[in-house]
Amino acid sequence: MVKICCIGAGYVGGPTMAVIALKCPDVEVVVVDISAPRIEGWNSERLPIYEPGLDDVVRQCRGRNLFFSTDVERHVADAGIVFVSVNTPTKTRGLGAGKAADLTYWESAARIIADVSRSDKIVVEKSTVPVKTAEAIEKILAHNSKGGNIRYQILSNPEFLAEGTAIQDLFSPDRVLIGGRETPEGRAAVAALKSIYARWVPDDRIITTNLWSAELSKLAANAFLAQRISSVNAISALCEATGADVTEVANSIGKDSRIGPRFLSASVGFGGSCFQKDILNLVYICECYGLPEVANYWRQVIRINDYQKGRFVNRVVSSMFNTVAGKKVAVLGFAFKKDTGDTRETPAIDVCKGLVGDKAVVSIYDPQVTEEQVQRDLVMNKFDWDHPRHLQPMSPSSAKHVAVSWDAYEAARGAHAVCILTEWDEFRRLDYQRMYDAMHKPAFLFDGRNVVDPDKLRRIGFVVYSIGKPLDHWLRDMPAVA
Image (cartoon, rainbow, N blue to C red):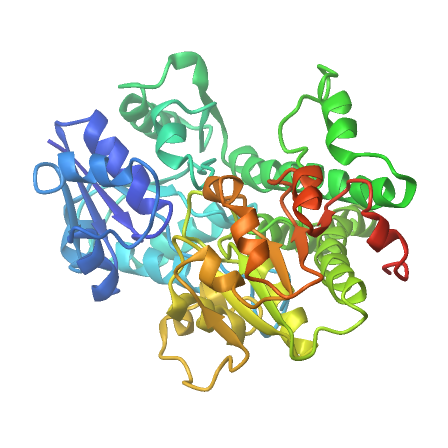
């Protein structure tokens, strides 16, 4: 039996290994992590992450050929293929702080592999890493191996999953990318990993490249996707200024076959664990290779995203008589997108902090995000979410002006305004008349995801702001938003 071990039981490692186990019943797959609570979650009926379809996949395989364990060393030693799917957060101090990827956890994983291996291994980069990381990992393995003449082949196999559709993406991927050394041993390792994916992925969707192309492709893909979001968000600001409708503009643009319709939905901004982190990493790499113009180009994608979040907060405050002090603002949605409980880099954090900074009383409802997670995110320093301290106990007095409700109507009861920050489907079906009746007047609704019909809500009585759409007459009379 082929044995696979994955170091790291997070948003990538867990779902990916579960699907491999389902599609390859003759392959033993073990996911290991040093976090006992996380492993306990994977072995329980309530998995540590929410992803549509994941529960069913894990239920079918767990205990058969899919296992979750904290015994990292034993399972790494037994495996022929070791995936490494650990965090590569942005550095918070030292050289490259605020841009470069922190490879501390990757290096630790490599040292464990070197220490316990007694047979040849294929080591697979599943984490998003800077270009040339494989070269550094090869050196660590070569100089620290305890098992004699052990040979390692490093492969890059980046994930291209979208949270909320990860299982669907794994079942039917656009592509599977495998990069390896252009040597006989490297090509053999690529073929071995390709044979795993070939059980269910068509051959024309499995792309093989050299190591460096695979490593860079992941960063470039996320940068291009984020660029599209920032582009349409920049246009949304111009639409509001001119009376154009960003939805109509995006639809027109998207009909061009050279552009296409994907990732052209204007919003309060992008979030998630990858886009900002990977673009900052790309910026740092460009700077290191003496390409400041290229670095500045990609840095602007982040600046537009920050501008969009700040513009949204300014719109809320300026519309409500230039102050939200003491006013209750209901926030619907805290996850960075629908169908996930992931709050990493969610725009809701910056919006809520901006409102609280102006002394608003914020009431949050999200169907998949716990109160503990909300409170933790609002007191955490930037980039800390990807470090172990993210799991440490929280100060009880952390966010005094923020409450969490488990019901959208309760969150909005007695509120002066509602902000929609996640595009959950249930927000399209709410009884907004009921919500309006329970709010202070004038009742404001700020739609950061364009999920509601603004004309319908205006007929109810709301003052409505929708990203990139013609402004309500009330808003046109207010001071311009910087």
